[in-house]
Length: 187
Ligand code: SF4
Image 1 (tube, rainbow, N blue to C red):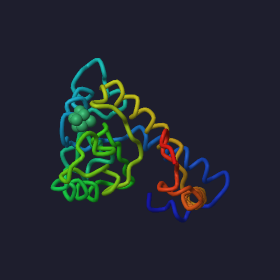
Image 2: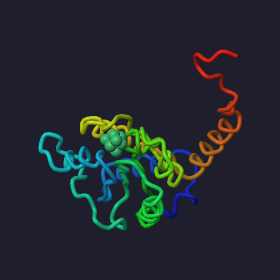
Image 3: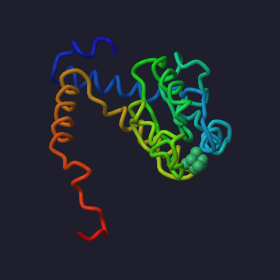
Image 4: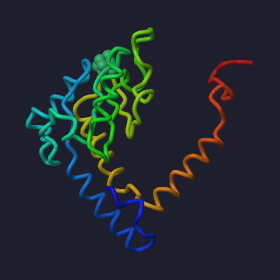
């Protein structure tokens, strides 16, 4: 929303936040693309009546990224595909969200080799991670509902700037990974 940086603080901003969150979470359109086996499970929620994703107005996966605001990264991301995934993300309408579906998209999964990106968050920001290999359609539905909740509670304007500062401060204060003791390792 172009005006959000100019919004005032206080009661009015809270009301605008709630309204914007309600509208955004109920008008998500996913981009049409899949990368590997996880995409089959993703297709199930768009095609099988028992999952009925149309309850959320999401059943039409958009063929153009410009008409989509949700990217479901379904499958492993190869180094060759990484620039393409980034380009699709860049072309999507803002504000936009990313759901990393499955172990491969989130961490490279079982593919410990040079061809696979070790987590799609190396190339685009991720809003929610979904574990599993592959996650079942029910799990994807659950992740979408959790993302709805997250979008519905998103802050705008000065409230957002405050949260960004807090998150940055806690990231700086966190123990670096190389200093965290490995569980079960002696010495
Ligand atoms: S997480 Fe499993 S099902 Fe999904 S892309 Fe990787 S190997 Fe395939």
